Image 1 (cartoon, rainbow, N blue to C red):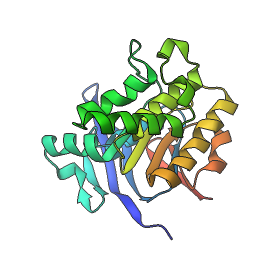
Image 2: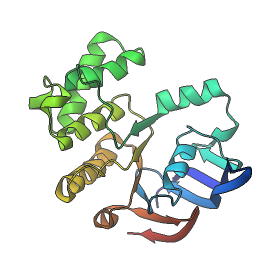
Image 3: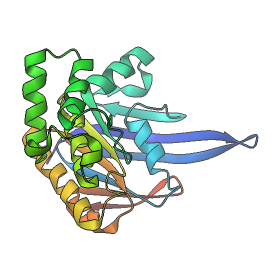
Image 4: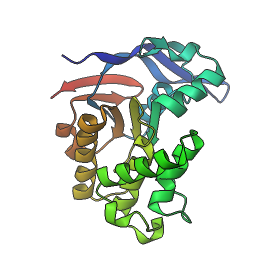
Length: 229
């Protein structure tokens, strides 16, 4: 049985709306297994992106606690949360957010430069990551010269370059066709093995559910179903 790398304890998140409190998350408690693929499933407005922001230390819960690798991340200072995200977490977004004037290689190498990695190590690691996602022959191409699926794979290479402990992917297949989306998720599974990372992703695509190790289904800010494959 895999160890638990992250635990949510009665997570709640409220936002002020029209002078009242709107509860986007209503007391969620669950665990994320280490070196596994966990999917947060739900329709738009179900709370899955809000939850992802809590887990990724991008936002604070109104109530509750999030434990990552034995640390309560909601109690960390802003400086330490920033460092946690930069060093130990990776992020992939629906809009790949690549720098259009940079090649695939430069996009991946740039994130390592920001983390203070030396020039030789940057070059070797950027090449290695692009090879892992099947883009060894495309690393000199800029994003407009790449397909949607290729751009998403560059974004994945960039996200794993600094060897994060956990990777968060928010709707990474939303703009892709079903076949390409499955390729991306299968790539995630391969990276869990080769990189030793843990991946949490959001999606509403039912075709991807069987690939996950665990699926938490959300509706109206609550977990209504849990599936373990």
